[in-house]
Image (cartoon, rainbow, N blue to C red):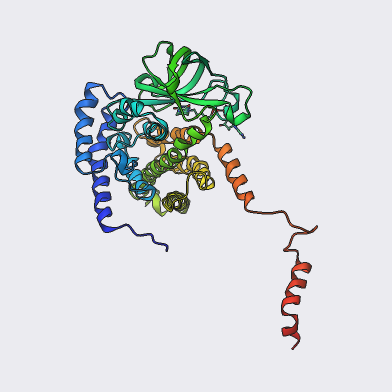
Length: 424
Ligand SMILES: Cc1cc2nc3c(=O)[nH]c(=O)nc-3n(C[C@H](O)[C@H](O)[C@H](O)COP(=O)(O)OP(=O)(O)OC[C@H]3O[C@@H](n4cnc5c(N)ncnc54)[C@H](O)[C@@H]3O)c2cc1C
């Protein structure tokens, strides 16, 4: 059955979320720095009371199943909520749904020991700590097969050695999930394993923190793991299973990013339309000019198409499909997301003229953010390759020299089927 309706009771929750984010959460973006600096006194004063309101409303960490204290809403409802959270930078953290903690929590829930769950997962879900996912290396991110960080077994410890790049939130994280080569001679995708490393472990070093344009604080770390020793049970999943473990977080993570990106693109479109109706040039509002109308129409259609793809993907997962079987959809969502945000934010910037390009408006940040969402969790090209490969799996080569649809052959088949009727 197909339906585009929202249950009335859930719509009441969505209406509350939308109002709450716009009126009470969005102002924090102008007052606070990094949303991961959870011990900053200003964060404690301003964010904690809003998180308490979300808990009272029963909307905390809705991505989690009931076993972990969430609602078990499923991806479709989560999509509808995330596209509201994404309106504000502090939206996700106020609702307990911020990356990379959500994905890291999924890994711990799947692979953590009881002790690791108690020590890391529970406080992570309560936002008493934050975490870091440390996978990319300076010599390459899009191709994990070039990673060189190693974990070598010495007695009852693993010793991790190597460098990582753009490890977001490392400076605030209580623990790191680190990917390292444990079996250099194994087949390509069985060479690496995943480890949990407490931040205070000797040898964990932040070389420097990087930031991208428009970010309020430098939070992406260039890291060095200097002979970092962790106990054997620090391995998450089996030896050589790092790629399987990573997929647990990346599938959902990419989709949730897309849901939040819808919010940012929607804001850009809203502002573009407001401008088109407000600015008068050569005797008429901008919105009366056909070239401006084209920008508005293209933006609306692009956003609508993207949102439908995101919602369809969420729906497929809710039908019980695992991330592997919706890989094509997730890769497609990831590949199209940067273009949608880029185009709509850039058009909104342009229609606002000099004001649009100034730092007093958020458009340039959103344009840069379109490059962020096109790189983080893998660049667009790689996801397009996945889409194409998955699409091609659904086809077979034609069995004859010419394609089936070639006219003389198709006509001959049609005549074989209907020739008697035609003649009678
Ligand atoms: C804001 C932000 C936050 C991030 N946070 C994290 C984090 O927390 N943890 C973490 O581990 N990593 C993180 N990353 C790193 C991210 O995963 C990498 O940037 C990404 O995988 C690309 O790797 P790279 O930057 O080394 O680019 P490269 O691998 O050098 O790729 C550069 C470009 O080469 C082209 N390219 C690459 N491969 C192909 C191909 N197969 N076909 C055609 N063209 C190709 C693409 O145009 C691509 O953009 C983050 C990145 C950003 C921007």
